[in-house]
Image 1 (cartoon, rainbow, N blue to C red):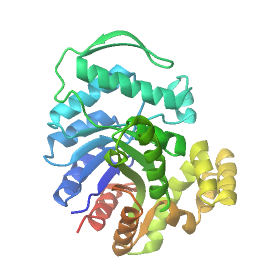
Image 2 (cartoon, rainbow, N blue to C red; image 1 turned 90 degrees about the horizontal axis):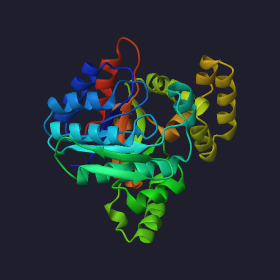
Image 3 (tube, helix red, strand yellow; image 1 turned 180 degrees about the horizontal axis):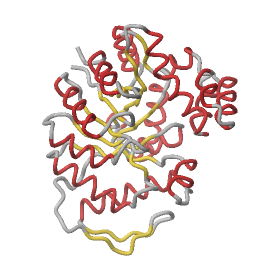
Image 4 (cartoon, one colour; image 1 turned 135 degrees about the horizontal axis):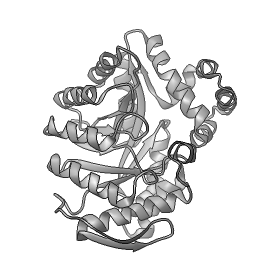
Length: 331
């Protein structure tokens, strides 16, 4: 059976995510992922999911290396891994300066280095039970675990948007987490991973390539596109990194318009400025049959694990989310 994951980020309560994760497991999904952001504590939610499931893998997509300390991330990962009996995957990323600094009041600098050093501390702490570390961005005099991890070595995936970080994944990560990617990115990512792996003497085939893809399934395709439009507007308008990505994907004029409207507080206008073509390029939208075709297209493009991210809001968010999970279930 082909692998497929489902990721949650907002719109549902923790209990609704657990219910939806149980549904995904019953339908044959490979894994359940939880974002950082504003949707609830990812480690707490995944612990609850782990207690109510028995097979699906559990992952963070991603845990920010700036808003939690490296030892805190290591402990949280070890706890979810133990409660789920070894089903946990730690997805790490740098998040964004526009979030880390104003929302958390923390300094943001050298994001690539911060990811690498955090991962190194996590690996050492889980393996040895204690760590002392002096890096460029992470400094720990001494930290000890007062419990035995279920696994001393659990898989760590890195998020990446641009080639440099993809190469880093090839050098040292167990997997790559892409997001909002076009169908051409899978092959490009493999090239950058291969280059990084070669420099480190690793097998590039050992790096699992995943992609987080906003998804909405509906019998009326227009409803699916409308469900995805606000998210594309927010990412393109608010995050410089994703605005740049949209420009490189061929939506330069549209991206500039969205960013201008978003910056002036005209959120509805920014949302309406998102074209169906833009949604088609980086999301999965349409009827259940169309969604399944797109998932297979991503898989054929070089993505080992497509991860649908159902986009739903409001009082019917759970029903909409679960409808998308059912529509995209492996056959």
